[in-house]
Image 1 (cartoon, rainbow, N blue to C red):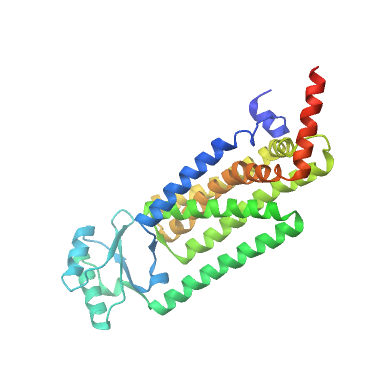
Image 2 (spheres, helix red, strand yellow):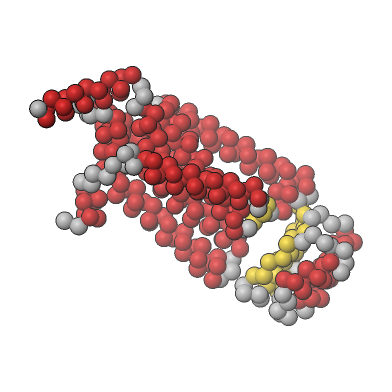
Length: 319
């Protein structure tokens, strides 16, 4: 029987909990890199969060990033972010908030260097107050989501499962944010929506694992908690992998074909968070949340007593 057939039948005997040091080391390394990237490189927040001016238009002259930035500096705009779109056929510029007169000169400078019609330039201006409001509401949405997670899993399963699931959610969130810091991709409201979707997906996968463990706890009276977790993980492994792969394939198509090849920046902002978050969520639900739960539960007196009883029984059986 092939290995995949054994996975589909739940007949594997992978010691997920026994290998927890390996999984935790990998996670720790990813988290350290993500936090360093966040601290050193910082996030490229879109103007929706920090306020400012966004200009976008065609680039028939094929102007380079340096040429566009030089043209803007010529009118006194020294802080700007320039992106070439559609392999240089378009250009997008973001700047801090500008005075109305300077804003008009920026449009003229951009149209001049790209040889485009000023009427073809799209202008997006966001004040700093509105940007702060968007950022605050995004944080509130995240807080409400995490609070609902703890309450739901505590009610449906138990508090320790809720806290282990919450640790996995923070794991996924930090890694996703770290990737945005490393790549320099702008963080937009679409990114926030994608992150909330990803956290919901990660939570679903974790709850599937924990629900199976909870079911086995009621059935298995002669096994340790670690053995029960391993059994539950092996039985739902195929479902988790299949769900993840079927989710990653269309998201990957959006990211690599629609966003990168066809040059749709809005799709890129949304799809990158989905792709990284789903991958991290699959990893954390299988290799972080469940081993962490087992490590925690094995310290409870009842499960310590069960483990000692199982060990005595096994020793007696070997005599």
